[in-house]
Length: 159
Image 1 (spheres, rainbow, N blue to C red):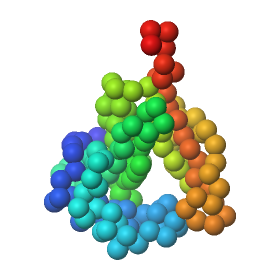
Image 2: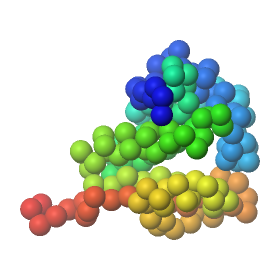
Image 3: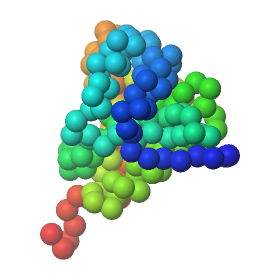
């Protein structure tokens, strides 16, 4: 990969992040519009860790992490621009998040839409297990699948 950098999101990234999410599935199918993304990212979500992946200086991916969720952390959003897919950016962004998370906790959770087969395969390839479905969570007739990657039980023998 040419020049990939991952850093905290700043306000100047907002327009590029909104554009990449507004132009891609699964969010289009889930009914998220550009206006929705503008509301979510103006200002940058508070109480969350927001990261962008830059490919040759251009925003190519975004991740939002919520700390302290079910004895771990929760990856609220992972998105890669359509033009930047199949280049390893999602995997690098996920690896970056996991490096941070597993230094402080044992579990990382995420959700993926049941119809989003490429994302389900992506997470499985990266060691995530499907915990179970949440039917009709975002849209009727579809489920969000709760996923978990773990470094071990939250409480060990030394607790």
